[in-house]
Length: 173
Image (cartoon, rainbow, N blue to C red; front, side, top):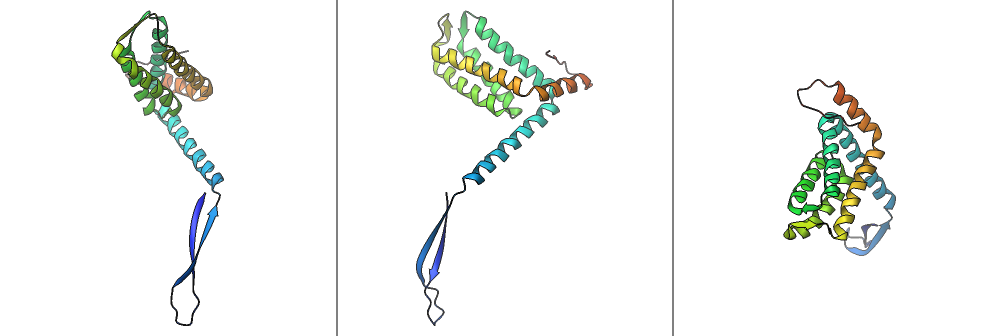
């Protein structure tokens, strides 16, 4: 709701600008706010696409690093919490470079939960349920992102294949 205030002046013969009353006008700006949020979201999405297409090899390697990280977490019987915290922190930072907000938000949540357990250093076999759930949520968010952005990922693969650069690029299938 947007509030505007307008004065009502006394009408007298002396041209005095004395306020007699004040009117409050309330306007519903729900639709405008939705449109602003939608435009902001679309702007971030365009920035994400442009950044991915600007550095397709780096982004594709980042995706593989993220998959490898989640696979390693699932396979290990002993979990070094501090090492995984740093790994997740690096993934979050790199995904934020590409404006992948939905993944950054999920990785931030996971990082926060990991931070609570850093004092314990290692887990053997028994990982707390809250942490397991956060790992699964983060991995699912990554997989959903990969499904929903197939077109831009295909474009990134094509660009990475066609670009002539000195950097080593792993092109996932």
